[in-house]
Amino acid sequence: PPAGGGLTGEQRKEREALLERCQAAGSQDHYATLGIDRTAGDDAVRHAYYKLARLYHPDRLQKPHLADMQRQLEGMFAAITEAYNALGHPAARAEYDRELAGRAGKHRKDGALDKPAAARDAFLRGRKAMETGDTFEAIRLFETAVENDPSRAEYFHHLGLCQGQNPRWRKRAEESLLKAIQMNPGSVASYLELARVYRKGGLERRSMEMYQQALQWDPTNAEALEATAARGREGTSTGILRSLFKKE
Image (cartoon, rainbow, N blue to C red):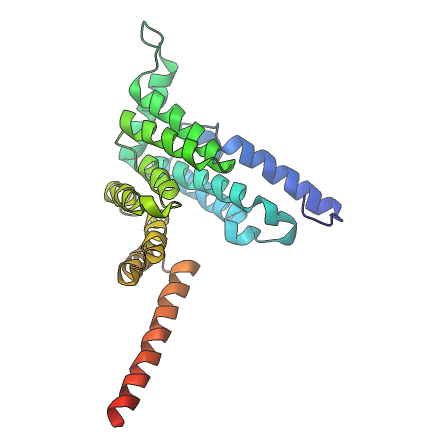
């Protein structure tokens, strides 16, 4: 709990409910994450996602009594977004349904998991490693996931997310995130993360390009709006200074 204690009954209840949901996020399938059954239509999938986004978007949970849970809350919302990306598009949903059917089937004779199932298992364990701050273990598991199933954008996204935390691996992070964007061009999260990687590396122009791409898909994204607005203010100041020097 936050330092100082003194939580109200409602605050304590909210923390407990959110913690329970965060803990379940890494182990549920996408249908359970969205709270729908497997026969749900496209509209039901969409409505479920929008309802959860209104409740659990990290920007809406920026509260003092939840300050120590922000990483977990972001991970939980990432699972919700991942579920929507998989079920909100017919082709991706069909692939995921086949994956679920494969999991329910028999294992190979030697008892080993098939590659997509092994990839999924590694991915979920990688997510848990991220939540506990074990970045190196998370990278190892995400690398296993992409090796076993290189068809999933979210595997590359999370791999790039972890790689980007180490300055020496920024090139690898760029490659992973570009791969994720190539596979899922509407992934605002991948554009934002790549923008951060470029910014940390001093590549401001590329960073702005990624923020602008994010705004193409989400015109209200607060981080992208702030970054592009700040860049515009810097450009205006530079232009004024140049005009003054020219006059002199």
